[in-house]
Image 1 (cartoon, rainbow, N blue to C red):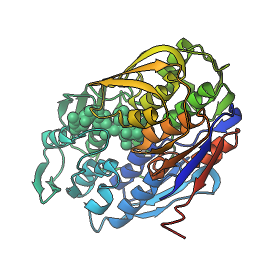
Image 2: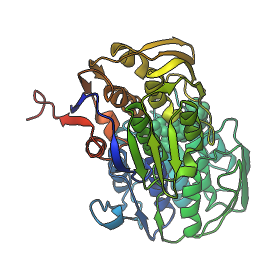
Image 3: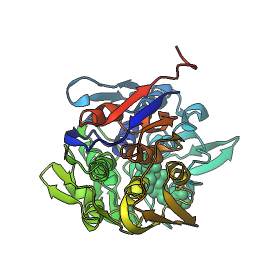
Image 4: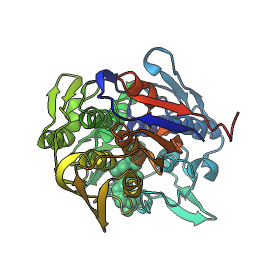
Length: 426
Ligand code: EPZ
């Protein structure tokens, strides 16, 4: 298993480019199931989860050509025939977002067999709201041997009030409703930019969706969708991770090819910490002399402070003067990075869903273990300011959602390199 070796101490200087959003690309690739025509997606990030999605779609009979290295990272997907509408456990267990094919498969083929995702490092993460919504649209869903078996002649429109705001739940039902009979109305929807991005693709495919990005979405079902070309949004979480990298290292970084308006909550918090932020049309300049002030965060659904930035912000809080209170409201087990940061000398206490971070504490290099995607990013950020050389194990977690992470950071002065497992693989 690959490791990262990071020597701390360098301020990050220069321009770093943001890739396309993993959490937009995944639902947009699943949306191709809804038509037999070709869907072309640009700006697809070169990350492991996209490779998993490709495997998932091709295992069902789709043709998928990932266009890495070509202009615009253009990816071609054609689901002319879905010979085997099954999302197999071997794939689903490696990526929960595989369950996003449930709604599109039922809507397009009238049937689906999808492995239940099982537990996850950051929380239970059930998909009961996906199932409840699809049943309200007329699907019959049974559970057999760890698989959801779903059937429907043609989905019927429904009025659904989500018990809880769910991003992929909103996306799954949105896709299903595009081919349902009648007009669906969804309330208490997720307002994340990834939902809006998906709706833009679906409308380009001939769907009739209004209100994406708000908590009420209307979908007038149509009998057929057609092919389309769509450019995926920039990754706001990757951009946010780079903003914190610039701030924590006392650097001067231009985070390029991002969408600043998607980062309002984070920018607001960084300014509270005394970080200088200059916002451009598609870039953000972050400057800090390294003098950081403590600030509290509480994770919320968009446009609140994103849970996917909580771990990275906690790394920053270890370098801020004073006490920062970090409250995680979305997932019940998203403090896996705390013990690893403590191994580096951080002073953090946990009480239920709240972590109290006392700073500024000088960090020391240590061997640390990555546990999930964003926790891994937090450990790299901490290592960038730690005294000495930190070894991060299991960086495959990071490769799931960050494209060429170490190369990009090295490009702005970080001392970071990847080490293949010399003992495991030659
Ligand atoms: C999406 O996950 C993202 N993943 C996550 O990013 C992100 O952390 C999360 O939204 C919240 O912003 C993708 O888009 C692929 P939810 P999702 O359904 O949709 C509960 C990353 O790091 N819930 O909005 O799975 C759930 O347990 C990943 O890139 C139910 O109870 O999250 C959680 O507590 C990690 N029943 C809350 O709702 C359901 O049916 C929000 O989860 C669905 C969700």
